[in-house]
Length: 260
Image (tube, rainbow, N blue to C red; front, side, top):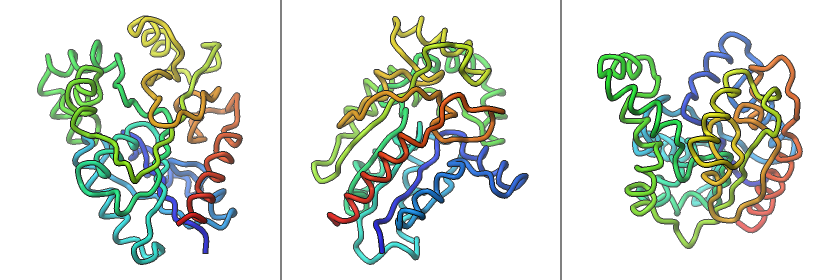
């Protein structure tokens, strides 16, 4: 039996749940789980609270892994995490003794150093309108608290200093970018330009800069926007397919499974 892999979704994981109800073949990691299983790996795709901060989601992530029947006794898994899912996993490892369960963490465009879109736009907007923040939280959308915890200031001053890496866990990361704005999924055209301006230049995938995505062993920048990375079928046509990146990730998971 191959190694055990956990696919951890980003901030708005409910989008995948809704899509799967409407069109059963759809999911957050669209057609990606099948690629892992075809390689002989066991895969868990847990759902954690959409719109909630990492400390809440991290506990739910560990609970899902601990109760996963396909995980062997005392087996340590690889977590492959998109966007905020990487922060959830880091919190689980550092603050909730998750190193005994997680051997390797591979993050895809995780805002390890925050994103200026939260500092400069989302957080001030929600802080000025508490009723709006409360309503968003009711529907599983990001509240002011969640947005603040994805800001550059919070990540630099609070999260990273207090959520240190564990020596017994392998940390790896990918970043994403698009060189031509017209190739982005439509909502990312303005956000990519704004993010580049707010963070003083540099590539980004529409939501997270490459500089922020780097953590541990950096495995490179993929020509994929934030949605293309998970192959989620919101776009009529994905300009770039993500399978080259995912083949590399599967190979890493296979190697860790053999080592464990």
